[in-house]
Amino acid sequence: MYRQARKGEKMVRGYPVHDPERCIGCGACSNVCPTDSINVDRKENKIVWIHNVARCIRCCYCVDNCPTGALSVGDEYSMIADSLDKLFIVHELDSARCTSCRDYVPYSINVISYLSDKALKVDLKCERCRLGNVLKVIEKVRKL
Amino acid sequence: MKILYLNLGGCNGCDIELLAGVVRVVEKIGRELPSPDHGIRSRSYDITIVTGPGTLGNLCRIVRDLERIGGEVDLGHVIVLGSCACGGGIWYDSYMVCGGWDMFLRELISRGFRIRYRSVTYVTGCPVRPEDVEKVLVQLLHSYPNLISSLT
Ligand code: SF4
Ligand code: SF4
Image (cartoon, rainbow over all chains, first blue to last red; front, side, top):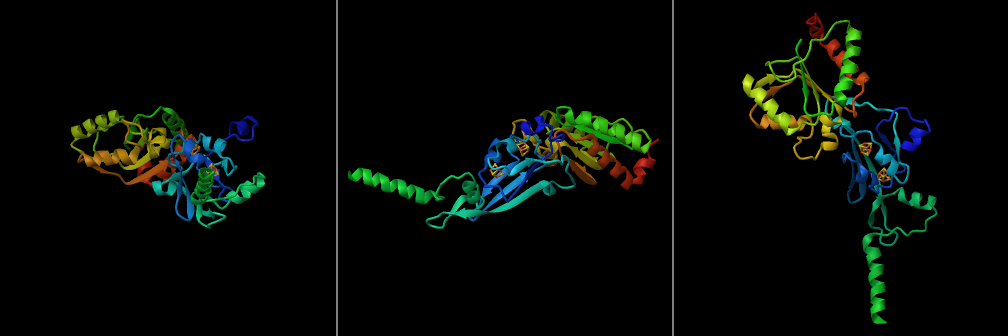
């Protein structure tokens, strides 16, 4: 955000705009938010990204810390409503699946294109499969 | 027209913007707004403007005010200004803070006070913009013409 502001790109620091096409559901934004106004809920087969604009102070820490660029500083600062329920922004993202057991992993489906963009060769595996691999290695070591 | 202005422990950021907004409203409607009460002194108000997250110190103050006037008040049209008053802002889980106007109202109602209001408008931002204050106040005054006609 400060990088953007220094370049003179933004004159108004609006509330962050979320792009559900790029968000991987990592939860970095909800961890750094000083008001906890972003919540990344991990349901079984989907990830729900919730932003409570009523509480957001437009500090844009979330924008600075988003690894994928899914969040950007918005141009819109004001939001006026007659009920607090109208001040929520909710986006639902589909969860990605484990490559070996087809179970859901706690990241959204965009993580696949994100990893391939970064040219990272990471096998997307759920916790159980990863742990299974570790257990196999431990057993091997024990037998030696 | 009677205006109640409640600073429930705000940092005065929203209050300064409110001032800037009110100056714009006065320029726009061409009449002066009456100076507001800073605590609940009367049983009925037309407009109530709230800023701040609702500290417990202010809760004690408002409870004292309400006990003095008999525990019943009509706040009229409530305008809730700023992130703190809307949802608690950065103080949402602090000790000694109710966490916004809704929670503050809940605390008052749970103490047995009868509080009525006609509408609530939440204006977000940290602080709010004077343009938003102007927009909300002018909209309110235009939709209730008897409010303007009571001005001198
Ligand atoms: S990708 Fe960005 S917007 Fe999505 S959860 Fe992570 S930090 Fe938040
Ligand atoms: S701008 Fe600041 S307060 Fe608003 S969601 Fe992002 S980190 Fe939280």
